Image (tube, rainbow, N blue to C red; front, side, top):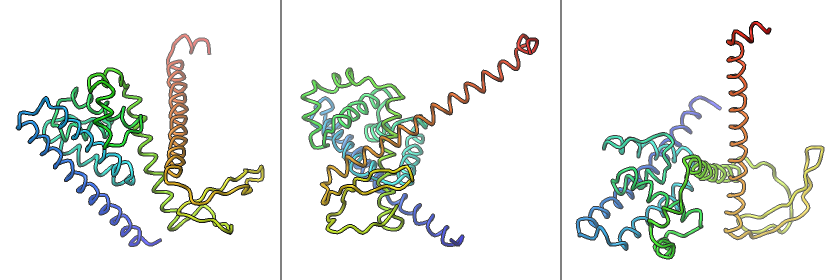
Length: 267
């Protein structure tokens, strides 16, 4: 592949990421304006307006951010970081995208933003559709009750971000494989639908036998399979991180021992 072709592909990826970022920011700007109008109308304590804003934040995240490719996600996070920083908000690299969305829309302090973000995270974990978020909050006893129950550590939030990013990566890889570089191409009669499932049995030789098929997979099953693939990827990443940390601990202990005078005498 020539340098020119590589540069052109990179430029296309960057342009796509910027278009995605601009679109999301425009939506968040509109939500922020709605929030201002809601507060100015002396309805700050009215739950209906608040729940609707949170619902729309969740919709933007679920329908667009989670489904975007990594380059677009990174572009959006950078843009939001720059905009929040310009208003005096300190954004950490470990800040969840949910929290960034909420701080941007609500122009709120850190504690309030984390509270709202935890409510949205609870809805995501419960599989709540954005349009059903107001009912979910009401049935759960309100925002404060959800916040009390949804005590999430920074590690858990970071893990959720990794899972969302892994889902986006898996979907992007599936699209690329479908369009350009499939893992393999096999001839099987009567497979139909946008996606079909093949059950394969791995062999010691490194090959695999196709032992069953299922055509016309429903979208819900496709999404469930993608989620499972993403979860496996995150688990593998966490294992690698644990191994790396263990290696670092061993190295640190070794260095400490080599600097211990008693250890040197013993040696």
